[in-house]
Image (cartoon, rainbow, N blue to C red):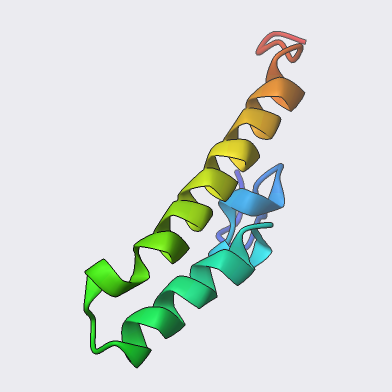
Length: 71
């Protein structure tokens, strides 16, 4: 039985801080703070973060492509 403290097989599932996209994530939040949650002024930050997450996801899928559940 796994303990509550066990880490997932890949770090990006554990915390946003482990993500390669953490700088883009924090930039988005800082932008929202700066502009009093006016999302329209931060769209560029959101787009950069979204693109980063897309690339991160594609890389994870590529890494896992050749894995088998039964090996």
